[in-house]
Length: 440
Image (tube, rainbow, N blue to C red; front, top):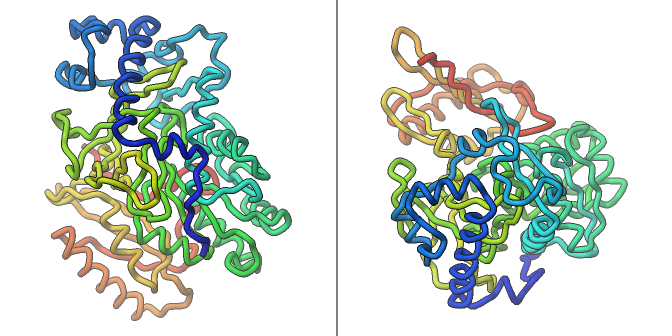
C-alpha cells in the first residue's frame, strides 16, 4: 500500500487560512458576476429578469434570494455557443458530455482556463500521490470526454512521465503497465476492476507483477466497499477525484490520504448545498445537491450551476492533511438516479454497499426493475467471486442477500447469483448497472 500523501502542488493556496480564502471567494464572486453580466448574453438576461445588476450583488446570499440557478437544460438550450463569454477565436479547447438525452452539454476553455484547470488538476494529482518521478498511465479517453485531458493537463504541470494510453484495448493497457513500469494510473471506477480482471486472465498478478501502487478514479459514483475491493486487487491506495465537463473536468476536488471527504478547491469554485426539490440553501452536515459558481472561468463561467450530485458539507474546523479548503462527503448519488420501487425510495449505491461487503461476491452486479400487472419487481444479478459454485450454494447465497437487502429496502428483491464474467463489461465509458424497464 502506498504511503499517505502529505505533499502539495501549491502549498500557499492549498493551505491558505480560511478567513483569507473566504475573502478571496467573495472578491472573486463579485468579479465573476460582473464579468458574466458584461460578456454573457445568457447571464445578462438572467440577472435582468431577476432585477439584479452586478453592483447589487455583494455575496452569494443575493443570488440565493433571487433563486437564480443554471441547469443542464440551460446549457443544452444554448448549445453550442450560447453560453460563451469570449469570442469564439479565444476558445482553444472544448469537451462534451455523451449527450445520452439528446443534445450534449459542452465545456469551453480559453488558454487562461486551461492554465487554471491544469493547476487544480495538478493539486488533486499530487494530493493522490503523484510525483515527478512517477510513470502515470491515463486510461480515460483523450477525446471529447474531458476525463483524459484533465489528467493530462495536471500531469504535465507535475512533470511526471505520462503514458497517454486512452480508453479501451485492455490487454494493451496491461502490457504498457508491465513494459513501462507504470506506478500510478487514472481510470473510470469500473475500468479499474476491468483492468485487474484482464491482467489476471493474461497471467499477470496486478499486486505482484506490476509497479502500480497508486490510483486516481472518478466519473462514476462508488462506495467505500468498492474502494476496498479495488485496493485489494491492486494493492494500491485509491483516490477519488471529482469534476464534470461543464465545470472543467476532473480536478474540481479530491480526497486526501484520510479518505473521509472531498476537498473542493474554493479559490476556483464557490460551492453550496441546496434542497434538490426546493432549491433552498442547506447548512453543514445537511444532505442535498451540490451547486457551483465558477470564480475564475473565462470562456464559459457558470453561476449557481446545479450539478445534480448529492453530498453534504462536512462540519469540521480543519483537516489533518493541512489543506484548508472545505470538505464535502463523497458523492452519494445523482438526484436523477433515485429509484422508487413498491413505494420505497432508495439510491442504487445502498444496494452496492450490501453486495460488496461480501467476500464471496465479485464486483460486478446489475439491477433491473420492471412492472408486471401494475406491480413493481426488482432483480439483482451479481457475480460470484469464484467459478463452479453448485446450484445449492448459489441459492443459499441468494437467500442470504435477499434478507440483507430487505432489511435496508423494506421489500424483498429477487437475487440471482451468476458465474464470474457472466455480466457484460464496458471497455470504454461508464458502466451501466441499473435498468428501469417500467413504462410510465
